Image (cartoon, rainbow over all chains, first blue to last red; front, side):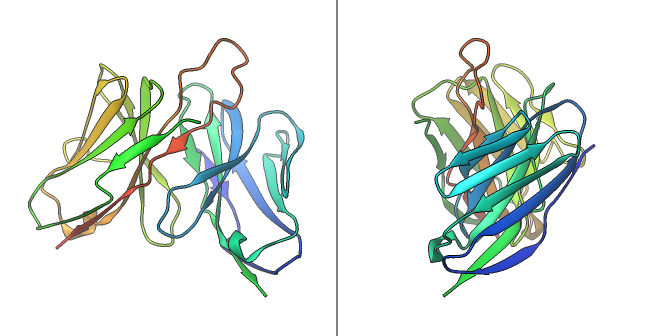
Length: 110
Length: 121
């Protein structure tokens, strides 16, 4: 089995920086993904890490430490449209399936 | 980029009836598709892995006789909710990724369909 944990909810102010953490326990790790999901919509891909370190894509960055079973998603220059759920997902090597964490609902206020 | 189409977007049915949801990869072939279920304010729960030309692999606790999966071609997988009941009301989402191209294919990112919201009365 695997446990993938994230904070349930976070709030932040427009223009600020927010870090969403994800911890996981799994065997056969083969990558960690971050997705964004607005209410009632499908998840959209944000970022991917398979090696330790930081991946930067514009306002979004994701970090991975495989030894610690830990990742975070960093959102900079927050905008109102960033209010959404952010899902951390782990892929296992053997089955290639993606298992999602509990998800974090982010609310960005003016 | 890869596009996954899912139909219907919304469906309302009476208790006891069956509902079929289609998932199509529009511009790529997918030997494997995944079906997820999402309840309000919860994360995505993997239900099953749909394998082209063979039986689906179900996650623990998912009834294979209730959630029938057929993956008849490299671009189509269907999920049929049989004898639906109100507790089956949920958001069902499929996903797929293009076949990897050689070694080091990288992320092999899953693309999700728009989802199907099922309401069973």
